Image (cartoon, rainbow, N blue to C red; front, side):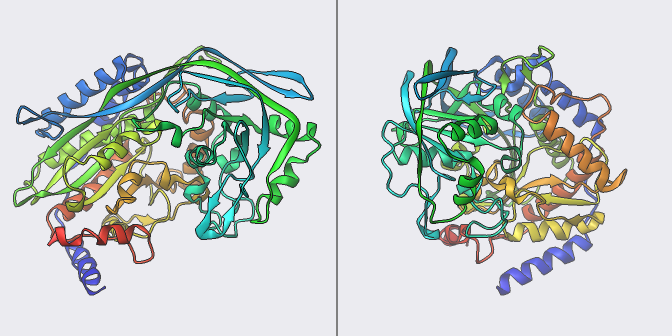
Length: 549
């Protein structure tokens, strides 16, 4: 611990004496967001003309800023991109979906009562006929917590119906970190475990509070093109059918089976919960799936270090969004993704411009714009699995997923509640702007697992995802919370996430000064931040300590 204390003390002293950072331009950030979120980019879905436009734009901007290509090697030279092979899946036509109660069918409409995803198990069709339904609580199998919702039930040919989030969500106490979501609460885990347990399909019951977003977000995110990393045996990670159903539909479904939804949900909060078959109820699904392996790209710009070029500080953000989908009430089919995440991508470019105006740092700085975050953090997962620069000598990852277009705030946060020295250093730097740290106000949303720092964290690299605070200088907490709630309800993963003419990005410009200073200090030090002793990522990081001598 002595090294840690000395390191943080040195950081604190250096912060007090730090030189002024470069000034970042909110108007320039806004212009870049306007470009990236325009209809011409068609929602920036991977493997589309929108991706080609995005890569061309980012490469041009990074080059103009004075960065060097940092991507794949080709003929001995670095490219601006890292190729990311992905499995792409699309439902062909309209899926035929229904529930049957005592043999009487009820037709379901895709995007309304139900949202099914293109099959990612490698099959070219989903053909499920009158499959029995089994309620499996939260769909969790966690031996280290002595928890098993499956209890050995045979799920072959059956559909698992599960709740979103963790068993602790309703009560705020228990074996799953209280209100803080664990990975067991994430929808990705529900599908993965369903596949491991042999289910023909998994249907997640949507409820707005435990999901942390409304049905419009579910429908917008799950009825479009799907992507996954290329797997040797995709059926090990994906059941044939993956989807969500509306809570009201689930309540009616349980009622027809002679069951009470709320009663069973309470039972599911206990490790003694037993799986319950929804007797007399079956589910059918029929649709074709077009699968193909495509190549998307991460965009990689690099500022080579003057003294320790093999040591790297990474700034990251995802350039992709959902693309084109079903029209909303206005007839709009394009998910522009202005906040999510044209704002973070534009901030990444603006940071590079700022670094270019300063003396070259001792360590290298990488500006990594990743693909397919919206499909499950796939671009960052690919980089972390196939790093262009060694993870053992990656000092830290600072991720930006949504930068504030509004007033600067008096506070900041990070996604999740992980304990990492990198956060302590960020808190110390932020004091120079009189900005305080506010812990994640929605730990139940599981944001730690939903952003591109996570694939690095689980491999031991100190990483965080920055979040602007809600205590605005102009308007206080009331104004900040109002804007956040409105965005979640009306724009998040919806066609309404569009550039606004009144966005000043004053908050983002100020926050970039803070994030620049943190990265610059790391890039000009011999410091190697680490996770706290109680974090599971610590052991993975420590295993590579010899490579950082």
